[in-house]
Structures are given as C-alpha cells and as structure tokens.
Amino acid sequence: MRKLLLASAAAVSLSLAAATPALGQSSPHSWTANVGLFSNYLFRGVSQTAADPALQGGFDYAYAAGPVNIYAGTWGSNVSWLEDAGLYTGSSLELDFYGGVNGKFGQSDFGWDAGIIYYYYTGDKVAGAVSPNTTELYGALSWKWFSVKYSYALSDYFGLRDLNNSKTDGTWYLDLKAKYDVPNTGFSVFGHYGITEAEGTYAPGLDPSYHDWNIGGSYTVQSTVFKGTELGAYYSDTTSIDRAVYTNPQGKDLAKGTFVVYVKKTF
Figure 1 (cartoon, rainbow, N blue to C red):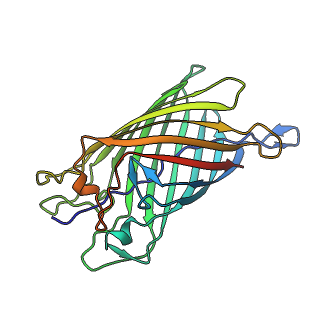
Figure 2: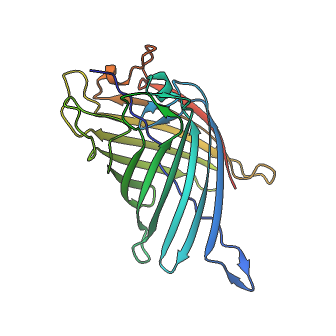
C-alpha cells in the first residue's frame, strides 16, 4: 500500500479584539491579525514541513451579536509534505478558511464554539493522487483553563484512502487542552492530548489512527514596544501509531517526539 501522509492545520484559535469606540458607543465589529515563526509546523503531532521552520499568519473578523460572537478568518503556512510524498508539484502553501459562532452559557465560566473549516493546498496533483483539500465540522466546550473539541471530516481526510480505496469522510479528531495563565506575569503553561480515528479498513501496520500529546509554556511580552509578542516552546510526541504511515519517502519520521520553539505576534 502506498504510504500516505496526513496533514492538518493548526487548531483554530480566535482572539476577539477590543471593540473600537465610535460616537460614544462600542462597535460590534473587531479585527485581529497574527504572524509567527515556528521551528517546525506540527499539527496533531505530525510535521507538515519535514521538521523545517514555518512562517505562519492569519486574519480574523468577529461580530458581537448580543450573547454570541460570529466569526470568520483565514490562516496560512508553508508546507512540504505533499511534494515530499510525490503527490503534488509546486505545492508549498496551506490556506485555511473558517467561520463559526461561539459564546458562553449565561454568566458562567462555561463556553461553546461551533463552526466549519476548509483546508486548501496550492499546487498541482500528480496523476492518480486524491485531493488533499479537506472540510471539517467542529464543536467545542470550554471551562476556564480546559477545553474539549471534536472535529469531523466531511470529505476524504487530507487525501487518505483506505485499503479498499474507499473514501475516508467520517474520520474524526478529539482535542483535549488545558492552559493556565499565571496571574500578573505574562507566563502560561499548557498541555494537550489528541486522538485521531481514521475511517476505513487498513492493512496491519498501516493504520493511520493514532494519539498525540504536547506540553509546554510561553511568555507574552508586557512592555510597550513589543507588547503582545509571545515566545514559547513545547515538546510533542505520538503514541499508538503505525510509524510507516508517517514516514515520508525520504525516510524521515514525521511523527516522532520533538521540541518546537516559536515567536508570534497578535495585532
């Protein structure tokens, strides 16, 4: 069976900017932008750049509609996995487009989020390759420092087909996260555990289902000049995994344990 690589995007994190005052009233509209440099582009524990650095960034819009926020945005990063696997030519960019609604349950610390995301890859497919472009629905619940998010593929999962060449829509991902901001310091600690469950039938040793986890910390600069700049580092690894699926044709294990360092800025 041909070795297939899974791609994904960084989990969408929408930060609502403070509304801009207008004629004595706060505007319901807000815009944010972000840009970051990462030593490796990992998502769901798998490198999308063959352990090379990634430049990433995006834009978000939000509208405060009473008790809920309606949002939309786009995000992009350089990638190499499609060309490395011989599935695409001229493919070096991932673009994500997403939108949804979020809010809180009354005045409590419990929140919710629901939306849709489309992962698009530039370049040209080689003959016989399945399109890696993927659509997922997602829903999330949160409480203070904790969140749980469920994503469900409506299309082939990043070009994956099973042993019988059947479609892999229905593949899902469960994302458990915790993040604690140390009061009045700018420091945060965070951790994550994820489960990928691939739809379909696979040969022994070639099942793309697996678990991933990470743990790390960050510091957000508080000074005026570089205010909002985040410096961070974390360690990521995978478990319950058939490594042949995530080893590229160049022999590199894309899902092995690794450290990532990054710097990013939100505007």
